[in-house]
Image (cartoon, rainbow, N blue to C red; front, side, top):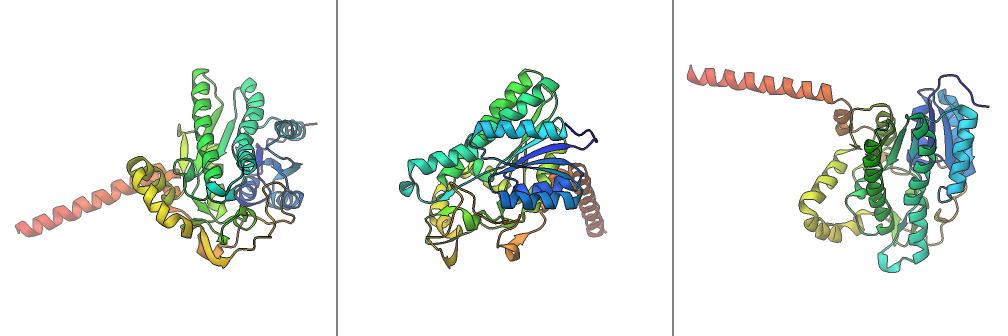
Length: 340
């Protein structure tokens, strides 16, 4: 039986670790009731403890988002337990670090099934519930790589590109239908998540996010803000590096091809040799509770001034106007002194 205590009801896919884990914590601090979807039970139980300690309510739902039946079953369970879903966050992903020429068809299919089709299946389950009520928000966790592909991550980049196109098509249809259901995409920078130690990789050295690196809590704050602020924006960019990548691809895409060909291999690897026999999570979850953060704490930023400006546009505009005014007054004063 559904609970009716006024809490916001949220579903998060990929909730066991990384951005999904940090997002669950952030919504929990607002008192939300959260359906936690992921494959790894250890991580899901850790996320449940986090949510409950932060003041929220949690429902653990072991789910492979590549299976639409499992996603639909999870959505039904959330509404049975907590009531109508207000916010659905599509976040689950897998990847493979590898040159295209060394990838297999099965690897491309698996990454696509999870990282792209998992979003499609989650969106469909959300729409089945939100459209009849004419309310609700779907948040697609994206990436700067939705616009700018980089070497060694072709399957992941392709999936993020696909999510971008899918979301734009859906948004047009919602506008056509006059629906109050909202879909927003949050484009992320490089993040300090555990994925770089469990992703399947053929790189000779350990994988790393391309600097600058941000903590997953920065991403979580952006997701929560986007879900709860309907100011007409289609997308939220997180981090100045994301802004530069997206705008740069529009203006100098051919130059970026050559630049990334020279720098993209080294930038995605540390100096530590990789263990070719370590476990990875492409087909099955890696056991254990891995938390929200990865191993790059010392190099990761806990704040983004760009995100602050994005989410405080009024204050940023006032500050800019104030600085312009001060600059104008200073210039006028200098001119008076010169004339004197």
